[in-house]
Length: 292
Image 1: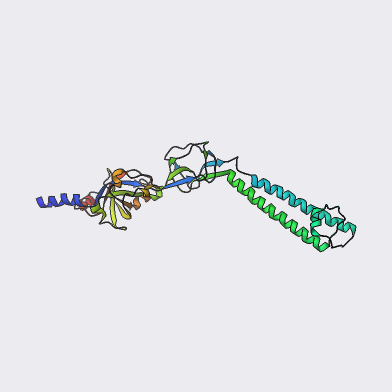
Image 2: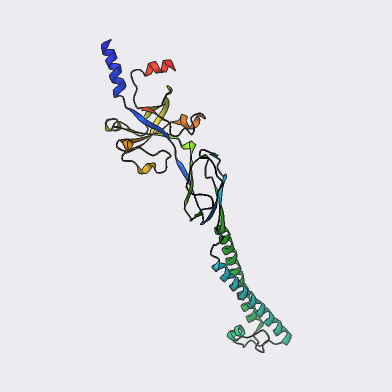
């Protein structure tokens, strides 16, 4: 009996276990697509956000429009050239002449009411080229107007379902293109992060089964090791909701995928709750199963 008790005590202690496990989740960052003044209503942290939901708007009344002004001027010149050539052709018909000896440079620099005449076929070539230039400039102006519209205002929408986790810019603040505006916590990406000592770490492999238990709850949830990152794995937490502690970074990092945390409505979005992870069967697991 004494030996059995010792076996239970020792078995419970030496099994691969972590007591610093925490429910974690990926963060989705919403960034400013343009520079401008931010118009964003206040929302309390933890607000449920739906994919595609409008989060804020950006407006930039000072967007650079120099290129558009230049294109407008070019368009006016091109349109005037087409009108000049059309008038020149009308003069030719009126004068009833077919002289095709005129220099094209003369045509380009003389007014329509000129005594210089060119052939009908040459005039059509010049007129076709002028109209092509006019159409090309008009197309570039349309593209520039579209670009300015895109740069002068923009709507920020949620890229995914989640909870409002962090606000990084204020209403009416002038922000730059690419600046972080807010972060959403993606509940559907929940996982368990933890650290273990080296003697446990060296026995673990990706894909290995494990059990997770929330603090104060007896229910064990099935899990699978999905990441083994080793010691000092601080950088991989930059996009996760819960950062590692100093003690965590001194040990060896493990991530566990626990499907129940994503499927169970009562467990979804429980980021920050702590628990324990067991990597091996313990002597009293059969008793715990009977008591469930």
